[in-house]
Image (cartoon, rainbow, N blue to C red):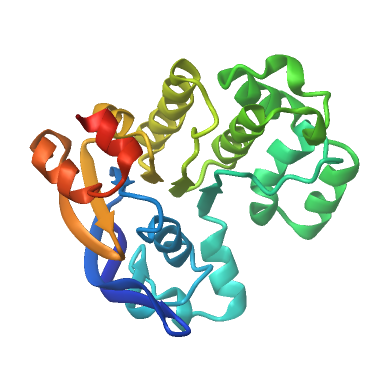
Length: 253
């Protein structure tokens, strides 16, 4: 089944062209990494796919045009999407347990959602996901007590607990050391493969993207430069993609 389909999709905000029109097809269960220099449009692409932004052309999620749906139906569709942000929007005063359980708020009735804010309804489930990310001892703390890397892992645990059909991850492991980055990304990949979910991740770490993802999309200045299997990506393609990015050029060299 086609989970994500873009046809002639582009994005312009004011006078700024963010994404040039392109087409894309992702099967249910595919895991794809998007790489490219800062400002390439990677985050905007995820926001377009998550229906946070409305672009040009056609977007279909599981065969449905989200913008042709009623507000209620579109919200139901969004509950099937899990977002992992580079800087998770977690209030400092929010308990870590509640932050993880909030992953399923969109799937619960209003009554159950309100009740969960007062008394966690599935603490064991939340603690299990935190343990997968090496945060078993943090469940009683508040988000404001955690480091940036720990907050990123709470954001990942939240999506793991949500169990969405489409995971959109924007630099999900940028604040983690290489060992934690790999294990945290592996947790996302494992769930996607186990559930047949589609995973699309923006990654600054090129080597990690090539190691862990079978399909790579290269994005530069709002244009898709390549879309191919990881093993087909050559040093020349990466050099062209990151031309002028001294930090990445040094790593590639």
